[in-house]
Length: 294
Image (tube, rainbow, N blue to C red; front, side):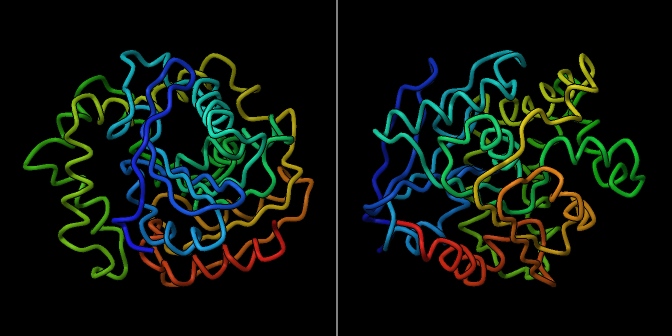
């Protein structure tokens, strides 16, 4: 199933016009991307999953062709979760499989815990539950060093200017610089990510995820670092071991956040951009995990 057969559509959810790409028929699988990405990050997964499932890959709030509300308050976790909830309902379903990477996982972890009836299976790629990340930021100096950019993102305007400079050189460096397999992304791929980042308001929208999360933590650090509910559905974690942003040791605490069956699969010699760098392995692990799901 080629890209030419994928449909581009829009949904009005949570007072937001959201763009998404869809393909295939069957049970609903939602693919949630991270920063600084958009639906295109799932280009290798969409055709593989669409053989059995109805695949929907949205541009998250603030990204690419989805609306970009002005103001940090619009990027609070509660709003991001409500976007997912609204999209599932807009698509005429009561539940879905969530597949999420990076900030998409930052939304999917708490969403699955808060709305267990809406998540049949959870598949996370290189993203810890927010509570685990916060604990490590407070106790793990290595992770604190890796996460330096999260603190830089709290500065107004300057991060956007830096990412925009020299034809979005830092956007390209974020991808190519972290990849172990430098050929995993083509020139077209990099151009697509730059084009999405260049959409008016897109860089601020993406960075506002970090700003809103930081403000929420400052207001209630204990509440932010503790989870009221745990994930109950079967959960698969796929982790590229050479992630320069998130240490492998974060995964050792995941069992504390999951009551249901938890499987963790590590991919050695692979970066943070796991589904783009090693798509065949990722697709195989996802399809195996969903082999008994109908």
